[in-house]
Image (cartoon, rainbow, N blue to C red; front, side, top):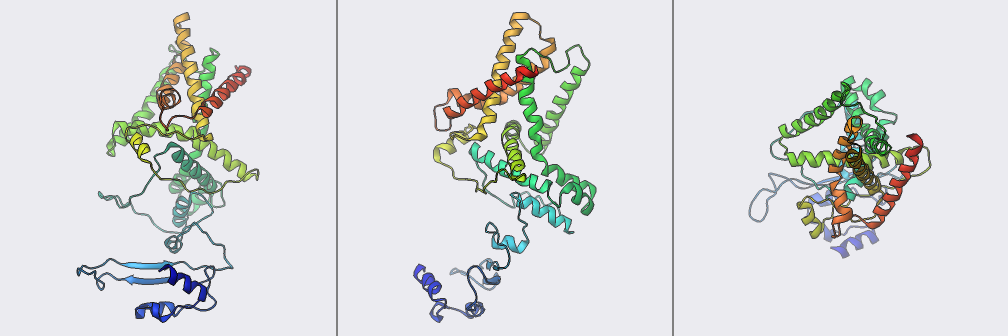
Length: 383
């Protein structure tokens, strides 16, 4: 087969010895001398047709259609696009091309239906390595922001073309990376203020204290109930909200910075395919619920820096409680830091307790310590 293909490519002619049916003869008869791999029309050929073709056992074969998208030297070519993607009309120019395509099809008048069969209609692979997971979300963040601030922004164009509610829904998802701002604030500001013994939340005697408690319990309670009602488990909810925090602090933040730098022409990014390869040992750790670090990556720096600051501020707060005995003004901050520490447990485990290949690299830990110390020194100016 390889020799045949190479022979045809070199000669530019398909010998009749290689043609086995009238359908093949008809398909190849469209080929002209002007066709090249970079310049040819679309080719669609039915190889097997349900109801007509059978296997050696007499069973009906499913439809098998060969599709080769057309290419032209006069038009830009998206090498990432597959033939079926080109036929469907996938829109490119954003790293979140599936989101952008869905949005633009809606703007052109296509209507969506909710199809959620009991049997999964589509199965796919997702990365189980934390670095690949965060890197994938980083790329999505850049792509979503490209849609949010493009010519066809859901806020301006979508709300007028589709309808107000649908446009706002697309705007909400396209602005997902903006979550990095409040998450980063709550990951660092209360902790640094706690180290300076500065209260930024209401005291226990203040009625507003219970408003904060209500908002926290209400938000997490609603999220938990929605997941349980949809068939999830408590463990799945816990992992989901913990992963959401990691994405917000790492992927969303770095993705937003990359988008801003790209927009003003300071730097550009290269598209990278997310690795979904899984080793045997990595798969075992995943099944045990262990996070996979293992590589030196800037995506881990915000996570480890936040984990270190939260740990130090919590230990300092406990020492103050035993030393002074009064925590009324700092209770909400201590509770927040404690909750953050519980979520950061896999990071502490990876930095100190683990010895496998999935542990946190020492280089990342040392850099994070330096960054945490630098943030503390900077906070001395503010507090």
